[in-house]
Length: 128
Image (cartoon, rainbow, N blue to C red):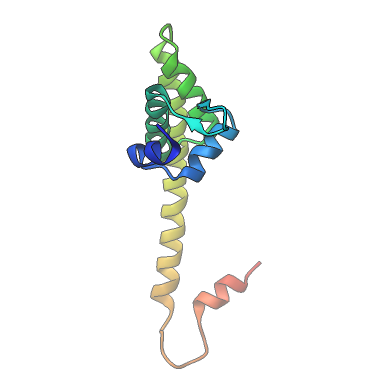
């Protein structure tokens, strides 16, 4: 299958597929003319990567997960450790986003939103 076929099958843009090849996540075969030939295993790896990326895993975590996915002697504890680390990062981001939301909500509530120039939002943003 060519890159357009695997792109349709996985939902990944061709540019992303080429990038994954460039950084060594996949290694499709090449025809004599240089065109890529994707095997079913390449398609499965790309679908795996698409799902992992949709869950927010970074490229290096995807690389580690993909290596574990292809290793039949893997320990599920290794997979779980990667997922737990990522989950902790997500929880930390959620906490930070909630704090930003709370602060911005307070500023929006404090702003009269009328024709006067006084604005607590701008005053807060101008603080060091």
